[in-house]
Length: 88
Image (cartoon, rainbow, N blue to C red; front, top):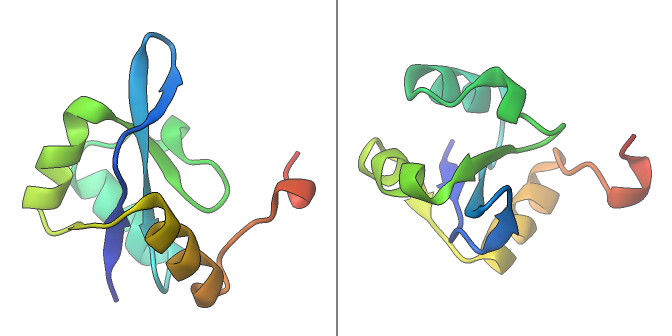
């Protein structure tokens, strides 16, 4: 199992945001997020939105840095991806 984080490139609320996902398990993702200070409110069905200033710390804690494309491909392959049309 691997936790993945992409490059912060999505602007919102005056900063850039990245995504944090698991390639296998939401339980693993939630445990990693909790252990590394990612607030539960940052969870969005299949990923956490994390601010740019948190990415280095998450990578140092073991999250593998990947491109947005790689992250999306891994999430789809895991079966955990929630498609846009299935969101709220």
